[in-house]
Image 1 (cartoon, rainbow, N blue to C red):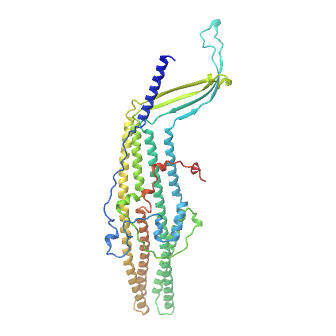
Image 2: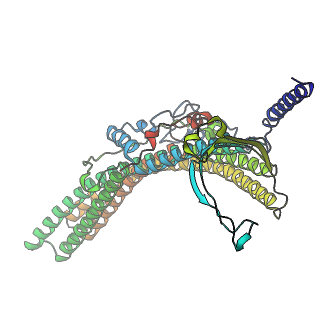
Length: 513
């Protein structure tokens, strides 16, 4: 071996080592801003303003104690309704809106794999065979007035091409992070959709039970009105009473029947809504009548400072901010050149029998650099767009937190006020019943006309209906309070970026029928 050859080999080794060192150094670069979670509006108060902790002197509904406790797991179980528990389990399995959110989450996870695919080189093969004939009139030899005869050739080729773009500036890494954070946001959206559907089911369930109780009230009213009509009709037929009492009794009876039919209509509509939520055909679904008077249970509130960690919508908003921050990193990466390492090799021969001979080998290798020198400041405009979207997402996140506190305080004051109104309405019913009984006695003794009985009875029925509505509304407010608190969810249930990027079995993506 000559000194020159030895020197060339040494220089080649040094160049290769330098290239590897540069690759290791540059591949660790990651342009773009480092992510810092936005500062959320927070409260340091030990309890919510509208919490009954601040209204202990008032009767009625109270929150659970201790205040620091929070709902865990299946939040609807605090209502102690076995039938509701069963329906909620059916909803978790069969609800199609939840299924849509789940598939959106799985699609977001697949996007992570799409982004990660850029880490790897692209390998392609393009086997070919070509037979061609060249023109006889392309040669300079034109003696005898004509060209040389054309030639015919064949070419068998079996090339393999490899190209790889190293992630020198962190552009691909930021795309992967963006996909991971977006998948986390989709996971939080899935939890939010579950909570929304579960809350809707619970509210429809208590609406049905309220209609059941209302139907009992109206059935009793219709029965009493029918008896009153029979009595006034009998008095008129015997010449004791007057006909106006009969007319007034008929009017009261028909009005009660109208309310009775209306209650049945609303119950049917709530039942159909529940069928849809649990994935059942409304035609084949029914819920048995079960008149019942409910009282809202004590609800564990937890600390106000922990509210943002318990709301899936807040988590989704924060992960959206993180994803947009990664997008800004992608925008910065566009300002740097793309370096592509390419290599190709294969076999070529005019005869197939020599295609796999060692002499048929071909190869080429070399890097290329691509850099846009001018595009009308496009990359700068795109970066400004990403930064503005980031700021908008931060504002959305803060607004979501503020809305969470508003909803909790609204639901607290609603539940507490419903409870206090129920206490007053119960007293009103007691006095309305006394008024009706006294007026009935006065009519029976001939002191007052029947219209006074109808008026007293209408007042009593109105108070009974109002009480039933308040009792239902108290349950709805309690459900809305639990929903505002995030149900049994907290941020610890959110999958990590690593978990969102874990391999998913292909069977998960099998098309559904």
